[in-house]
Image (cartoon, rainbow, N blue to C red; front, top):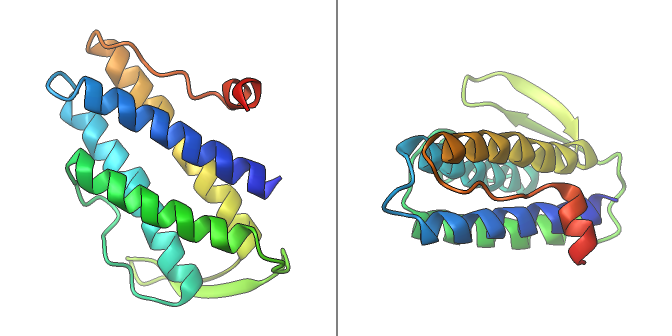
Length: 147
C-alpha cells in the first residue's frame, strides 16, 4: 500500500504542478508557499531517512521550476526507499529544525509524506478557488480511476 500511496502522491503533485504552471501569473503567493513546503518536506524526509543534512528548510519558498526539481529528486528517492525489501519497522533517528530528537519507523514516515502532501494540496485548492482559479482534483480515488 505504501508503494501505491507513493505513486498517488507523485501523481497528485505532478497534476498540481501543471495547473500552477498553467496559471502562474494568477496563482496567489500562498499557493507557491504551500507547494514549496510540500517539496521541501519531501526533500527533508529523504535526507533524514538517508542520514544527510537537508539542503532546504521547511518553509523556504521556491519558484515552480525549483519545486519541480525538488519533487522529482525526492519522489525518485522515496520510490527507492519504498520499493526495496526494507522492513516496515526500520527505525531512523533524526532531529527536527527546532532541535527535538525523534525515532520513527520509515513506513510511518512514508505514510506521513503522502498525508502531508494531501493536506497541503487541499489548502492550495481552497486558495485557488478563492482566487477564481479552477482547483485541481487530486483525490486518491481520481488516481485509482485513472491508473
